[in-house]
Image (cartoon, rainbow, N blue to C red; front, side, top):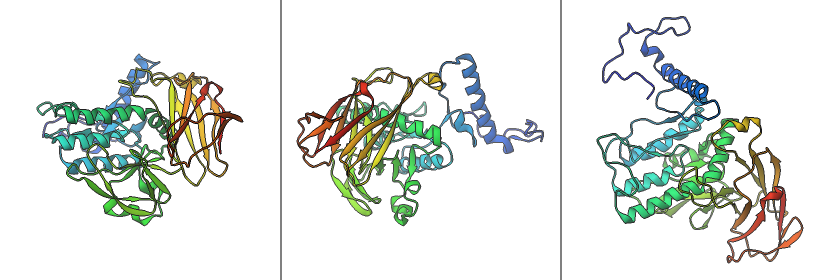
Amino acid sequence: MNEPAAWGQNIPDLVQFDYDGLKSTMSQVHNIYGMQMVRSTYEGVRKLKPDLRPLTITRATYAGGQRYSTIWTGDNASYDGHMLLGSRLVNSLGVSGYPFAGPDIGGFIGEPSKELLTRWLSVGVYTPFMRMHVDYDHNYREPWIYGKEAEKVNRELISQRYRLLPYIYSTAFEAAQSGLPVSRTLAINYSFDDQVYKSDYENEYLFGDNILVAPVVSTQQYLKVYLPEGGWYRLSNDTYYEGGKEVIVEAPLNDLPVFAKAGGIIPMQSVIQNTTEKPDGTLLVHIYRGDQPTSFNYYEDDGVSYAFEKGAYCKQTFTYDPAKKEIGITGEDGNFTSKFSKVKLILHGFPAIAKIRINGVLAAVAGEPAPLQSVVLDWSQKSSLVHWE
């Protein structure tokens, strides 16, 4: 919590703080106090375990605290309104310098319905910090508490989170380098589009560059969404939508309206049960047909140590050029051996492809029917050029 707990009382003014030489009370230093607790925790753990990255989760903090901790959004309640508010809070924290944030999924206080818990979990999949959490005297938030049917849906949602880890980790690295948040208000990428500022679409956001998420309350099965310029594919079924338009889409509990950007590149992996388990060795790179050249910066390291500061990382750039009909893997950087030995390029929305050449050599196209097609590359070469005809 990282703030004094007075349980409904005020911290007495006789408790004073230095405040850069100016004697001050808790009312003045409350948020800085929280940030300094985070800082001391971070620095203390680094001193005790200098080779491991600490993970601190705080509620109280101040500008600059993102250097030491992630943050959760506080004591929410089990209402649809709080679920939607949580998404907006995370987006607001993102533009305030906190790229790694999230709410208590399901609500900290109260008892969510079966539908609300599932819907909230589906939004949580596309949240930087994903945690189900509850007060001690309420029902637990385990994904199986509402029976087999809900458990099946919730299990698939959690599996999707694990599939997306390469995309999320690469986007988190970008945030660490540039400050650009993982969850992004549409106003960041579409600043001059008046539609994104309408209250009808205030809950929509980008998750990284290439995924658009449209949260919807648990009692709705349809949702009016606004898709900005360009093209968009429904992530679950590849249905294509022209951008710059309002559309009404289905929103069943097992299929939150989530869209991949045309031209978007989304790396994924096989399903794992926890982050200490290795995936099957094939990086699944989903590429969605678009009209403009695009790229995605992929990043990987061991996830736990500071060895990346000494070059133990892997950085690659995936490029897509529709005019040249080429997909490239370029820019090898770092001396970290990837957990993946192969790359499977999965093409969405592409017309039937007769031939694919990898570095000039004719290769077989995987047997999926058009428009979904794929080809597998040996990633040991790192740099590759794929051309289709």
